[in-house]
Length: 390
Ligand SMILES: Cc1ncc(COP(=O)(O)O)c(C=O)c1O
Image (spheres, rainbow, N blue to C red):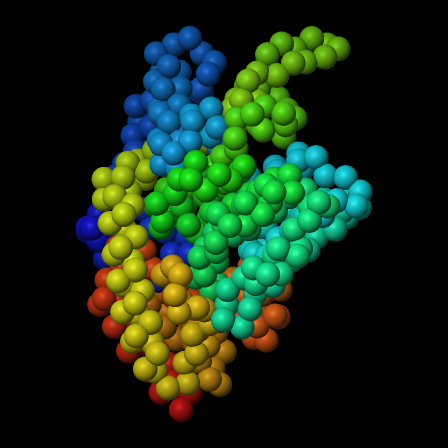
């Protein structure tokens, strides 16, 4: 794993990978190359450039499908996780009295769209509690998921706690009552080998920018037979079969869900990012990050006044902590002066912060290009923070 592939990492210790990841030269070059050699619109023109752009765009779809073991037609490109969830909230059949089950550790992106649709339709949102050991209460999950449940949408890996949730078990519970199961995989697809056939989820959503790809492109995976039943999310060019002044008909999935000019350069970048990750191997990444996380936890636990906010096991390399008497914003600011980038705040999980009884946490989140030296830099950076506040 070559840190030198990432120009921006030259002089900094970047530990804010849950927010977004850095881009290797290969991804940056793929985006530049698209504009230099292939720029055209897709699926329309009968000219060489349009064909080249279309081939590249569809190759990105094939790569995204391969990456999660899906079929190509099951991959819809969106702006990212947030848009994918908004799409599902807007289009899944939800009626008055129906229940939507989420968990207490969801990102705002997997809370707010459901609250809105519940308000509009008269449905009810329920939350699987997080226990004191930062894992989901599966007994409560069993009670909450009932015949009234129409949608269960759960984060695979928490962006705050690092907890890896037993999504396969929750999926079985959802299917047993005929509910649709969605996985928010924004933090898992970049770090864990993902197989949608093994998970058996109905939908799975993630963002390109959290896996070395560019911003503005993400994926909505859906089982083909389910996607075929959904109405389009947006309307316009690219998604129609025939249009008259009176009425219109739609194309097949996936283009039925991709109205307007898509993010073609973004797809080219995502393709390069996927190829980059495949070259290293997701098993290798997973194993390496596990070692790094174990090292980081051991080191951080020795710091007086530092409390880890997250579980011991079954977790990813996202480490939230509090420092006694010091606000997370101050921690981040002082670490930044030391060229160490972490995040301080609520991490788009305000309800979880309230539940945990903290205003925010400091979060160090790792990716495969981070090293033990980065962990050591963080640990000595924290000592400096404590000196300032001593
Ligand atoms: C768990 C989780 N879900 C959803 C999102 C939203 O992703 P995006 O902002 O790329 O749409 C994030 C981003 O941090 C996340 O961590």
